[in-house]
Amino acid sequence: RTILRELTELQQKNPDISSKCSVQPDADPSVFLKRYLKKMRDLGEGHFGKVSLYVYDPNNDGTGEQVAVKSLKQDSSSQLQECWKREIEILRALYHKNIVKYKGCCSEFGGQMVQLIMEFLPLGSLRDYLPKHHIGLKQILLFAEQISEGMEYLHSKRYIHRDLAARNVLLETENTVKIGDFGLSKYIPENAEYYRVNEEGDSPVFWYSIESMKESKFSFATDVWAFAVTLYELLTYCDHRLSPPVKYLEMIGNTQGQLTVLRLIELLESKRRLPYPKDCPLEVCTLMEKCWDSDPARRPMFNEIIVSIKEITE
Ligand code: ADP
Ligand code: MG
Image 1 (cartoon, helix red, strand yellow):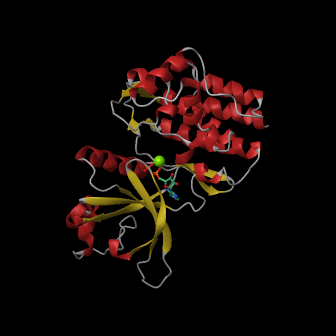
Image 2 (cartoon, rainbow, N blue to C red):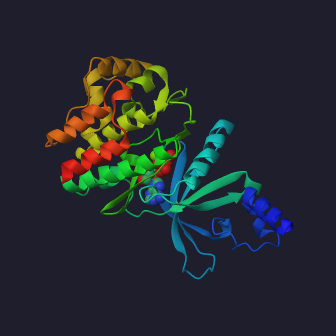
Image 3 (cartoon, rainbow, N blue to C red):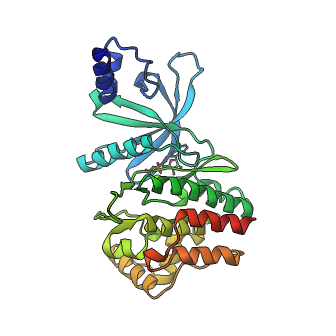
């Protein structure tokens, strides 16, 4: 009994050995063996990760299932590798209808390289989908409500997402969306209100709240700010010409690097915000305005946002 338990623990810590030792390799459905993973095509990549479509076919007879496999880009620092392991752990701990499902891991070189296996969502991200499919306002608000449900769940587990944006929301069907990409997620301890992160470059600043840019503070309320920027993206159908970076840069003038952040802070502190999208109902504009309150304590929480959206769509 204890031997079996020890073996299982060993296997969980180091899934790669399962193929070499006598423990049944199929016993743990979250262990994916490299040799049965067949790459079909690339799905997308961000700053640190790369996601590709694979077929997992352990019977080797073409009956395999499609999975999305995320891996850390080559030659990443040990700090990034730590973050990567945390991203996997976070997604593994989450279970909600509006959050992309964790399926398992595949490790190589004795656990040195780990890939994250997720369910494959064939319709891709809202960023790719919306410009090509002109859907109605009702549908947009349905997506907004589903994103809020996923976020409410995430926050109830005391995680913040920190990278909520249309590019990180995936479609399961024409009527269902799921939040993905937990690469920047953090855990907020019970007695803390925010998380202080100092990271240079490549931050999604056009989705950031004032306090995130000024004081590197991230909280449940900064996710609410990013939600409203995401809602703005949805309402503009992710039209590149109206994207948050393009619009903000129009307002502050084309700058680069740290100066962009300074100008952006100045702009937001003078109470200016992204323009309201064309044909945006007044109640939706009001909701966005509340989510973009300079004072994080005055922004609504996701349970309130869900109620507001339901009232609007009733
Ligand atoms: P990064 O951390 O590099 O931004 P993401 O997890 O956001 O990586 O994935 C990058 C892109 O890959 C997404 O914007 C989306 O287009 C695509 N993608 C990610 N996960 C899936 C999935 N489960 N199914 C289908 N496409 C996906
Ligand atoms: Mg991403």
